[in-house]
Image 1 (cartoon, rainbow, N blue to C red):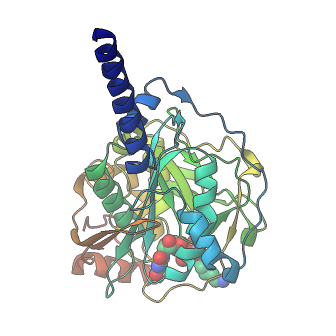
Image 2: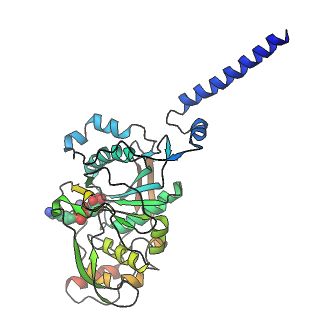
Image 3: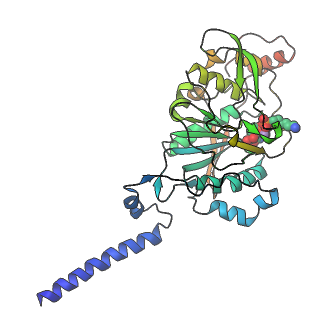
Length: 352
Ligand code: UDH
Ligand code: MN
């Protein structure tokens, strides 16, 4: 009699364990349930055997096909996030894309890049920060707002600042930060003949000596850890219109005692989706003058002072979409910009 009781009890235990395992597999197919936690307990770091090297750049119609979109969205969490199922990524990465009226390019970018990011086995989520219509575009301020909004969701330790029109040509170029220095991935772009871009400008790299310093192009796709971003104080908020917000960030990084590096060299190259300059984003005539006192503005104008209003936040299939009102330049700043156009640029730029 007692043998039957023990047998029944043992069977009950086995069935319960089996049903828990099976139900968790069905309830959490992407591995976010307790089963995943148990599996991840002893996670190894990610070894990336599936990278291909050079990848094909899609045509517009191929990138927009339903097959491409389905492949891009496969395995993603709602809101455009991914966590590698069998290993632990070195960083939690937020990929931030500043945007206005370039939705078609966004679809091309994400259908090309999601499969690459997934193969790179990084833990990431894509945030698209949309500027509402009506005022001059301000890339730097949008990126500050993006870091701030992403940080409300998760403690990201690595931020990627990504133009919407740059398609990576080699998937071995990893979207992972470096704790030593911020990284610039898009040094080599097809439309610039894959040549490095730099120029000399009057500015200070050490908070003291003003001189002609060589600034390497730092736009396109760049990366910083949370610490590097906070210590540099992110982007300046005063660059309305096209140009130099990335150069200002470069100067800030230098003043925070970092350099900018590209560990991949020429292997890391990009194709830019063809586009014209946008209405609403004319070249900023004050940009070179503003760089002269970038080092003085660093501590008061930047990530620590960015003001904006969130209009909406939506979790979509391929990304989290945040629409923001970042305001407009003050009349004082607009006057400053106009004066610079006529070559009588005042020395001290207003901070709004
Ligand atoms: N952006 C938008 N909407 C705009 C302006 C800019 O989404 O109205 C974003 C977008 O992510 C873009 C990034 O800001 O990739 C940078 O802007 P950009 O692509 O205009 O900058 P780029 O340095 O411009 O590529 C080069 C000048 C283009 C003139 C080409 C003439 N042949
Ligand atoms: Mn561009």
